[in-house]
Length: 199
Image 1 (tube, rainbow, N blue to C red):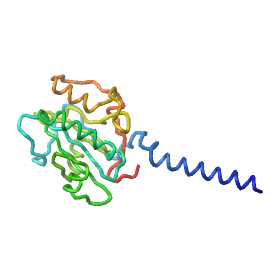
Image 2: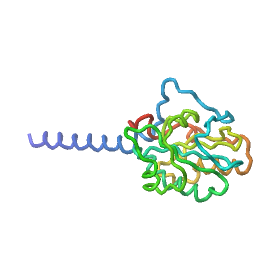
Image 3: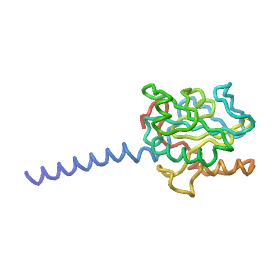
Image 4: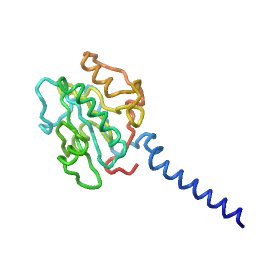
């Protein structure tokens, strides 16, 4: 009887550990399901923002799609801020908060995550760029065409310099490389599914 109790307790503990691991780590390493009716936006396609983001004339625009309820977004914030510090004199940056389970005040988010760039709440910008998960980056040429849409890094904490995709896209644009090549890990959406952080 005691042996059966110990086995049951160990199985319950193992199930709890597996559940925590799934919710905190593993599910975010799987590709985000493509939503029904998703309209893909390809590099080179014009992005119509209809004056929603004001940027300095003649400079490209980097949009950071962010969800405060998404663990991946929160882990990514310091990396995004590092990109702003490095490239902010050559590239316009903005943060777009997209459909979350509750409303977030842009100024509170800006202060909490130390964003030194405009923070907006407009999910139509995500649709215009073909974004359906967070965190995602969209880099738009000065002429309004999409240059890159994808992940920041293959690792959750953005620590692998070999897969620093967003930085690579920025460098490629500044070097005037017309059609940079990225692998599936850069272009396949990972992270938190929109409109709600359900995985």
